[in-house]
Amino acid sequence: MAITAVKIESGSIAEDYGLQSGDRILTINGNKIHDQLDYNFYTADENLEFEIQRKDEYFSFFVQNEEFASLGIVVEEMQVRKCTNNCVFCFVDQLPKGLRRSLYFKDGDYRFSFLHGHYVTLTNVGKTGLQRIVEQRLSPLYISVHTTEPKSRQKLLLYGKDDGLMKKLRFLRDNEIEFHTQIVLCPGINDGAVLEKTIEDLNFLLPATRSIALVPVGLTAHRDGLMPLKLFDKKMAQNFIYESEKWSDLQNLTGDRLVQIADEFYVLADLQFPVVDYYGEFENIENGVGLVRNTLDEFEEASGNFPDSLPQKRKIHIATGTAAAVIFEKHFLPKLNRINELQITIHCVKNTVFGDSVNVANLLGGKCIVDALKGVDLGDLVVLPPDIFNIDGLTIDDFTLSQLENELGANVRSFMGDYDMLWRGID
Image 1: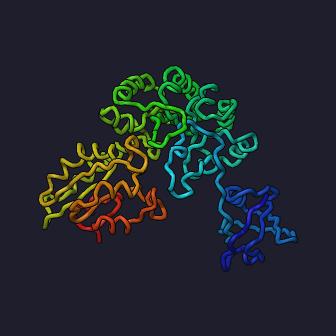
Image 2: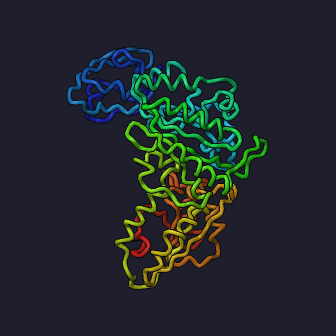
Image 3: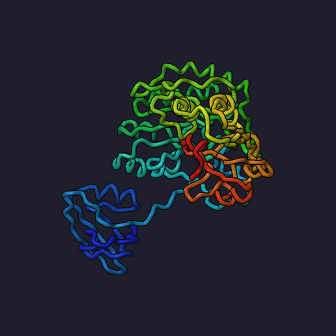
């Protein structure tokens, strides 16, 4: 195994030693280099010995880097390893046809779990991978547990055999690797007594277990040929929240609540969201745990600086998912309506890409927005959810901001926490 230097920066240490673009880095200090993570880990040393391959030639060189300066080597990006499971609730398997190709790829790479907080099951991680995690201190990891009971786990993951999850987690704990865990709850499969045992097992793994996030299963309208699954309804969500108080005394190493319930349960149940202390350091916010509470508190703080009146009338339209629309109307709209000359309209946008049961704002496609707002007098500005566009500026169904503006005949912006945009304009 080796990685390729795709670029050598001008004036760099690597250029001084004669490295060239296309050179293959075989080892650093005798350690085989498989990917960018290896490269970053093993170059964090003062004394570095490289073994290099250039076409059919091999050579070595030694670098003394006492100041830990950049070597000026840009290496190839890591290729994401594919998930080897066939989870019965996998969102990828529920995608409609016609979306961009990358969305159908199932990520199951523990390296990206460490780097970016991706949840992985560890089914494709063997002894070598576990040893690498420990050696390179890839902590914390984000692990999709779902259940620790082997038969239920096989039923959920359709992996075909017991993957030895608890043995792997004990190995990580014994070697001081921490992990956040999530359980996607499928009624009748991994709730009830199965969930009780899973939480008991994860609590046993303290102090390594930093959190247990309980998330309701999400189902799209595109499940033809897949295992029938049940959604949580309002009554089920209410009962689950009440019953979850039995775990309220469980704490992680820092004293924060160990078991945390996803926001969607509270939306389904139409119950008040927990106070800020419930979420500790908000370490599961990207998993939909505490996002609403954090947003409500940020709005409350920002509202202290809202103007009493605007110099001229402004009409703002906020388009968001069905779950967030209810929260906006209940918690945001009353205070915004107190501002003279500001008219706010909330649009509850149904998900026409995935189906009505998918109610989160960040999975709205451009088509959903157009379907909901086409032909409406949209005034001065349309405000969209913050995560509706990816890093390339595309919605999940490949609409750009410019396309949406052209389709709607209006100014459109994604909300990034700047409430002043509602009254100062978009310039």
